[in-house]
Image (cartoon, rainbow, N blue to C red):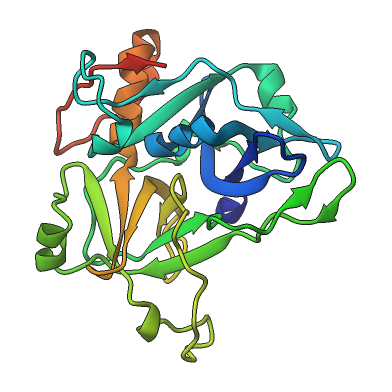
Length: 268
């Protein structure tokens, strides 16, 4: 059984002069035949301008996010901010020791758990991530705790909302989400946590409301409140980004059946 709700880590930011980190985004770690990649939204890495980025480690510690990173900028020569990139994905290669030092409650996602199939209007999708929060945690002394992960499930948005969000099914997943119409697991009306800051969230298909095996379908990149939608980049784009930086792993990486795309790469 896939423990999909344990496949996300909070990305923590430690500001200059501060001793306690705050939740700043989310990340997933993919395992491709023993090669590991932390995956988040590229714009999350821009948060390092105001401080260093960390991941929860074992023994109540935090570990710094490695410096070698790749972002899916549209053009390798493009010097613009990564926030101008519609794909908005960042890869951070991790070694085996990095993975061993991660929070022991965290589950690494093997490449066999991903689905590169196009978005399915008949399926439910679930965003799992850590909203941006000023709620901080003192890991060395375990005072407080990182804001609990949030799950938001629903169906795909109607075509007009995809247009408003300037997204297509070839590269993205757009989920309808209206906070005022949200219900809890019991079907009762409830006010959900604000999903702002869930960038880097895991997006699973068939995690709820289905007898099918859950599969990782995307990585959350933004919440568009005025268009009532959550937006994710399809996991197939992430897979193609991995193929671009590690062509030796190509034989283990699935293809997107509806999109034969390639990526330039920008090494941080």
